[in-house]
Length: 340
Ligand code: PEP
Ligand code: MN
Image 1 (cartoon, protein in one colour):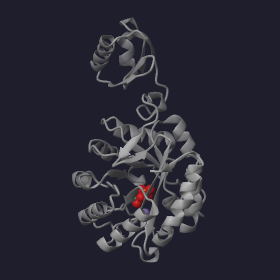
Image 2 (spheres, rainbow, N blue to C red):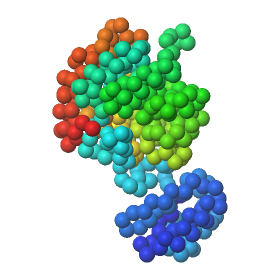
Image 3 (cartoon, helix red, strand yellow):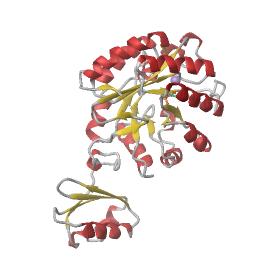
């Protein structure tokens, strides 16, 4: 439910409403606006109705929040678009575009540092790299684990690029948070609710990938799991979904970008690599993502993709990254965005 206060309501009236709501155990969000304050009360709408808040001083009306997603909804976009500052890189808000680039997985210090320096020189805003890899087959390479986190930290020290890396299991949460600047939740874990709650408590921005077969409403409800832990720094990621089409690895849902922008206040990035499964499609899809209003891209890059341990066919060649970044930046500029 949403409690809309009158323009005259003072702080004492707002505090009284909050205190009354809290007696029901609902999640309360106070949203000061230019004219009026709105108070979101999430969970147990019947319990909120029984409080008869309309009779309280300063309350104008009590209205239902209509959508299944609450905290991620633009209805609760109390400060407008969410704008994140990740070690000086702005994500969200419409004037910047962030390029998150790096290998699918950390293979060695030499490999990771080489890619990190190449993408930094080409204009990347952040470095990606998997330390713990979700693999379809249990016999495939699962990542170097903590050793990879240390390599990523070294790459950050040398390049200044913040590190984005995937949290696969709650048991790795602390060590991962100690090394990462952004905690990635992979597509396969979008509905791993225990993991989302742990990620929400780490105090680091979370990059949440859309599940392989998840609707956008489900994605925003997954974001609610992180947001309700008090973590407002969530970046949504469209990475392609399962459809009847098998020519591409997944079907990149570009319509998701403007839809999410309409219905949520959270930043949205696109992963053209996992969607395409083919590096020849990555640059055109990246241009399209920039042109359709994405806040950034997360893309796989390797010095020698043919020798990569994971996802080589969809991985860009590091030597071509600067030209790729220039092309994407030109398309982002069409919408008034500069590289973060
Ligand atoms: C990744 O980014 O490395 C990854 C595994 O992606 P996804 O979860 O989207 O498959
Ligand atoms: Mn990959």
